[in-house]
Length: 202
Length: 170
Image (cartoon, rainbow over all chains, first blue to last red; front, side, top):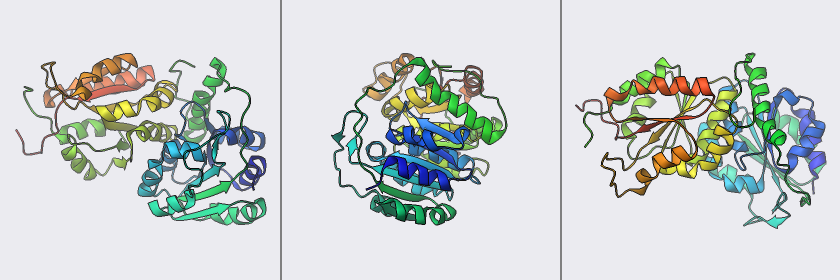
């Protein structure tokens, strides 16, 4: 079984200049290894919508790879996004699903159907290719080729669940992180610093 | 009774004028003619979503990548999309014009369709400013919505209070 830490390290080794849209438990591990923080967005205040944000970025900047670090609980909550992504068929979108079978952030309760095969579901929707890994060596060996091929691709990672014991970080500053990251990413992608303050956090 | 009709070509002209790049939508019964007309507009990419809650997040991603999207969903779909509106519209300060189908709107105030009854209170609850468009004569409100969204960095709604007409309808 994979660990979050190893999986994020291997993904970062192959990301190149990809935008990474992450959510839930893997976000913490991703920030520990990411070498391009201006290209990272952690969807922390809209559970389940990482795949949809990633699709928008991929459609908006089709020359740049976009990697979505999704999770099983989140994807179940936004399952239709598999069909939406398949329908738009962005060649630059790589959808990684960390499958731990639980809602880690709320203490480890099981998701409604822990046995869902997300790779098969994505294949049925029409993703170009799908993959499933449960150990790090095979992921490490296969990932460079997967990320150099056409999307949309779904990569399911069977990971060991880590129920979170501490509460969710809910401060004004923690909630300001997402709008700040999105502005930094827009500046990086467009070269224009034209998105001013708005909303309750900035 | 609403006087006049709303032609898709006139709304699309507004979208083109405001350099809209993507139209993120889940079609509904009132927008069939609009959808067909949009598919023929070469400057705008239609992005169909499977559930309305995806629309605002997809639009947020497009905007971050330098595009200029709008969203078009029905009022009932906007209710489903409430958390996305909160987290990825209002919460991030997204300048986004949302075309919201005002299903059940009849100007009488006694509509049997609760989707209509709740729309304006719902927008007030979220503090989303909005303009109602019922016919071609109201389309001068669309530039106001684009301007307000850009000035405030907030989502602004255009409530479409009628079924889009076919192009030959008077």
